[in-house]
Image 1 (cartoon, rainbow over the protein chains, first blue to last red):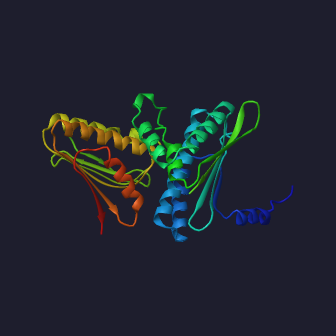
Image 2 (cartoon, each protein chain N blue to C red; image 1 turned 135 degrees about the vertical axis):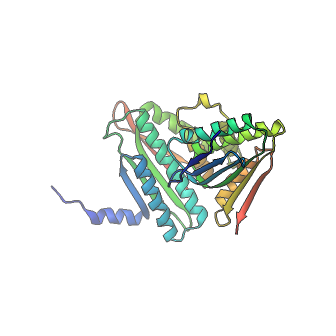
Image 3 (cartoon, chains in turn yellow, green; image 1 turned 60 degrees about the vertical axis):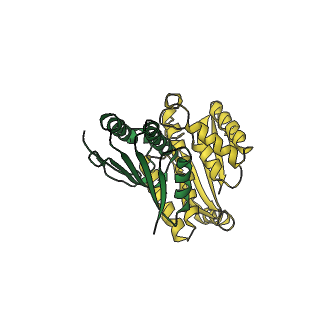
Length: 180
Length: 125
């Protein structure tokens, strides 16, 4: 077996200016621990307090959405493997990218939803957030307030980008990119 | 009725509700996976306090980051205060924040928009 080419991996990380990367099944504890490390790492890089707050907020919404979905769908261990990447863009900007396995139907639904949000300006996103916030509790999906994607779109400096890659006849890999 | 005391953790706020002084305090980060379960005892405490007493209720917040389900849970609590205010009960919110963290002030301002009772947002010096 070929040993892992750590150098090539490192080159990719450097080229993409990746600050943090996780690949595996998320647990509540991992989300918390990685989040704490992410905050401290950004503070050590002297990121502005508002940038640290925004990156952390999007990180939490992304990972908790993935975990909630994975649990709801009762995905197998292999399908629960999810990817989270935090990278640096130009001065003061950050990109959060995530990927996780979803059903084909949910993947399409998510891409459509991201597309609907992409055409909204900040004022319309705020109105959408408040409308969702006012939805009766019994119309919500379990523990989810249904606010995560709208919140990410509000914090982003560019429209969210989503992509689905089919992996088999039933499932797809859903990717989400948030530029802060 | 009893007081409420829930210790602060990395992902959940410290919660203190004092029946005699009519003071409810929340401080710290709030991003548990099950925010509705975390805040349910608080919602119940506020409901009981407002029903069983005629005294004022003061909410003192020193919250930092809230995930969106915590935002929803806190809004439900502020709605309880708003309803009480509409019935002429004295209720108020003071939200203390670190002046360096403007995102907390933005969040507090957004909650305040939907409240007609006294709602102070105070930068700590």
